[in-house]
Length: 269
Image (cartoon, rainbow, N blue to C red):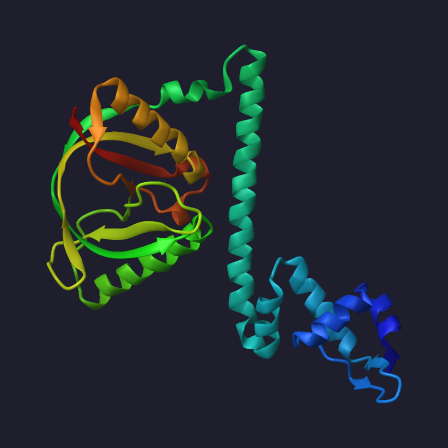
């Protein structure tokens, strides 16, 4: 047995943190002296503490670590999921660095950082009505990434189980009148041929359309350009804007390969 101080020193974890880990059930002292209250750990617990530290270095939350410790059968899938999350962050950072380098280069040439907005093309199109399988949720902005995967996955499972016929790519329709950090009215949809429970008609009509080739973080620029174009050309937004995901982000080698169509239903003022 070793004291909490010795255990702390070997593992590189403060005694305060070790007491907190005990409180939340992550790792308990092997023994607590009933008279002095001194905490003692066994040599065998060093391995467990080092394992916890490793999982922390992989950016698992304490709650996730606790779940893994309770059932190490989940470790493989948890590591694969976390690796995917970290890779996505790395891709995002790489794109950000590339974008920053491009901005620096443009500034050196006397070109505005926001000059790229002028290169976003907008066209007026007439869309056809389509039957969509949908689910509608209130989502916070932090939940979008997980939400896309979760809700589109459910829709695709329903399509497979009911043998429905796909008619188009997945889309997201944004119904909230304004951005709300507490939650936004978001509809996930996939066009299908069959009219079944959970489907509805998405009406067609006149739309201002733009296509983004790049990461989803650039969509705000596309939205800004569309609103600018609508105002300049004398149109107004009449229904909720929506995005169509032409490219599966999981199949894109780099963020620049992701293709997203953005539609703003409009009419002349």
